[in-house]
Length: 123
Picture 1 (tube, rainbow, N blue to C red):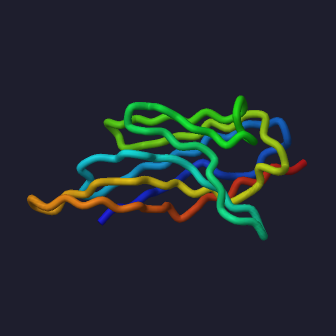
Picture 2 (picture 1 turned 60 degrees about the horizontal axis):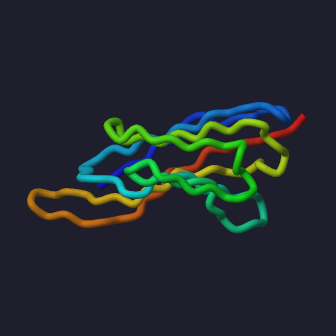
């Protein structure tokens, strides 16, 4: 079993910054991809940014140059530094991870989601 716990959401004015963090805990053998998705009201959930265990990254075009994703593999954490925030960045942000779990001598892969954290950009 695994748990992803997010922190760092909130209300910020346009042009401001926020930093989201997510920590995975449980019987984790390894984490391949770890990243962030978001879902605005009335819209589908969309990729924001992901990072591999080797720190390769991929960003949505809408956040390139403004958001930076980083991982600490030793701590099973992923962070998202969000700068120059815009009202259209308002959404619930979800941490996501593709993990290999270990139970005794058995290993298996799963995809897990956090509970979500609200980011609101408004004046």
